[in-house]
Image (cartoon, rainbow, N blue to C red; front, top):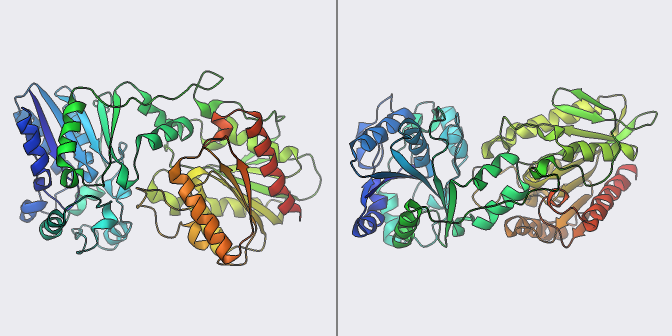
Length: 499
């Protein structure tokens, strides 16, 4: 016998799981839709001390009371935080954790960091401890795709929504690591922008901490619906949960690199001689053999990355290679580590970048009037500020396979970070855009939107195409085409620096 504990997202209660729970029971399983303290029809029970630990404790007591052979904890949105806390405390009793259309938080994270509405963070900062009101009628789309949700279910969602106790969102998730090896299943909702293909792409070429998803304990399912499958596809969700409990689902794999390890440790694509490298705080300067001030190229890594990632981006062969390659061509190559640790951290990372740029321009070996910024992958969103208000010394903005608008499911990113909205809005520098022909559609759509906006506004954009390359092609496609594209992109950037 398997018992499913079903934990809902913010502002809701166990009622959202009613139909899915009924299907699970009809299949012979036990199902426990949970309404946590201070939520749903228990809103009156919230007090000043109601926080994440309150909810974790409730789930722990429920797990202790269940007599079924196996317990599967299912978390949707915020619900995954107390689910992981309870799994950590009862790892010997929990058979599996299931995440429904929700990225897994790390220990120490507070739920507010991943909420899809950035306005909640501002509200909590302005009114610490005050309950967070639910979305106004018509505002639920901000919290995830409503694709497939029947009108009557949406009306009930709006009618029965309750304020969320502040502490449940601001308290950090404290984990001992006891549940870190538990089998885990991700249920991805395609209409909300999530897919197995996107996970596979991220694992193959994204931040190294994502390679954990290749472990045998992880499985994935994909449903063609929005963020609320328990309302839009309750039968399909129940079937997936039953299959998950049996260990079913897609196993994500990642090819090993030529060096036999993860791609981010692969030697740089080009044979670049080692250059002198000076470190100042978060910044490394790769110095050319040249007298007098030289132009500089600042390479901006993507993310989000793990806060404890080792080596840090600037110490990977990838960015050491780019920095050294620039230096070998007579300019100062600059690499930095910025703090893009989560989708709520773009403003923090933008501050780190601005600080790094000013440090570089103040260096007497740098021509402060000739600087280029070169963005990669998710770091492309940081280009928005520089395109909106370009300083005269910014001679070029470059981007490799970048997100130029928040990706699906990245609603937690502040509206400020949308290069598609800022390109061409000010008389700014030319853009060199390196485009991967085999890019994932989530990135491709943002690039196409950017190019359309740039054309309409008369922005100067040069596209360097890599027709047979994937996202992160310098790491995953070690071909002559990739080498030629890196060389062409660098020549295009340097030509604008020296123009």
